[in-house]
Image (cartoon, rainbow, N blue to C red; front, side, top):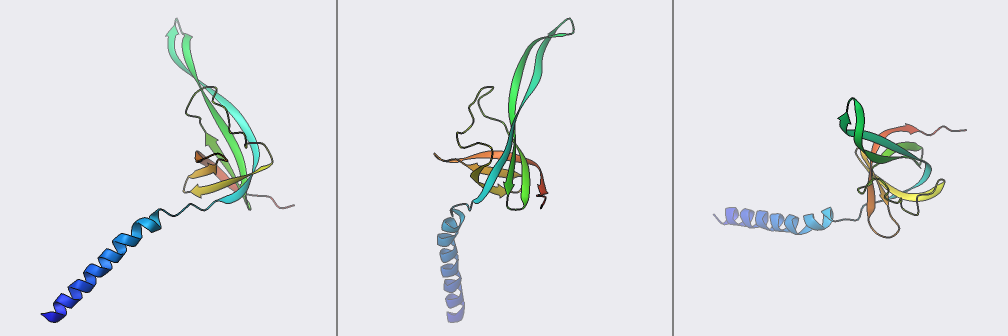
Amino acid sequence: MGALVQKSSCFLYLVWFIVLLLPSALCAEPTYQTGTLLRIERRVKITPMSYVFNAVATYYETVTYELQIQVGKEIYLTNYTPDIQPNWPLPNEWEVNRAIEVRTDKHRLFVKLSYDGEILTYIARHTRAKTP
């Protein structure tokens, strides 16, 4: 009986230890890599809303930016659609051939902003950089 109580108390201490350490491990700061913004291309998609005699009467525009970012030997082609359409300004640090901080997570690439936070972009494809 005493051995069973000792094993169960050890188990409870182990569970208590894991419960205390797990949240701190999950809240760790994400690690960013330095990348270079190679290209920014603005794309506008026009979506018809109503027609009058087979002609578009009203429509709305969705602006999407295609970013080409090199991180090490990988080149990522990502899509970013601003939340406010159609004229949301791009971050000031997004200039071609300028270093930016990025991190990847499966099919997403996060670009760190200089003021606070990060912007989510979706990876359309990625390739290896050509060596000269």
